[in-house]
Amino acid sequence: MEIQLFIDENQIIIPNTIVNTVIAGIILSILAITAVHKAKKADIDEPPSGFMNLIEIMVESINNMVVSNMGERNIKFAPFILTLISFLVVSNLSGLFTIVSPTSDYSVTLTLALIVFFTIQYNKIKSQGGMLGYMKGFAKPYAVMTPINIISEIANPVSMSFRLFGNIMSGTLIMGMLYSALGYFAPLITPVLHLYFDIFSGVLQAFIFTMLTMVFINNAT
Image 1 (spheres, rainbow, N blue to C red):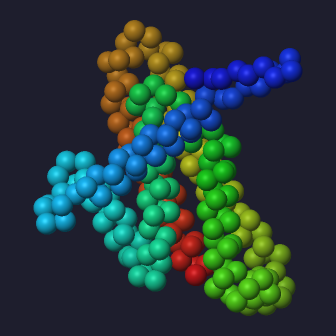
Image 2 (image 1 turned 180 degrees about the horizontal axis):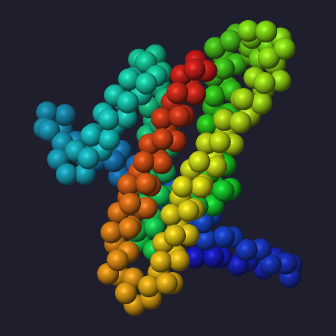
């Protein structure tokens, strides 16, 4: 769903991927508000059921994953990791509902990678005792390694963004070509392929992006 705006006779086009990003954010916000509301009203002596049971499983799974990969000291990153993987899963699975996935737009995947990148750099500065210690870290183990260390640091968000974008975009293009080629017969064949490109590959790429995020943040701290 593309949006066209006209301001002072100038046309501004908001791509459908950006619109879908906002929609995904709204859906997750509604779910989060609902979860908080239900949690406040829940009886702590009663076991959770239905929606709250699902939320509890998600929170416990993310907490365990963070502790396993980042250590108990980094449990504070669990809400960030949960938000990140939830957005990625919702975005990557949107193709099941004939909605263009936000992560098939490189601007979206690059933005996510930059958020992770600046989170990593902020925590590196904190863990290395300030900006001076942070800058000295690029000269380890030898000063001659400084350019390579800087390039390596910059390459992380680029590689993360291209990996996610490439996998989701390729799946979107392949499914689009199949629908065009098969015509009326598409509904007979494409559902099986959706299982791979949208469900398996989509969830897998969300997991990989999140795991890389945890590894990089753990190294930074």
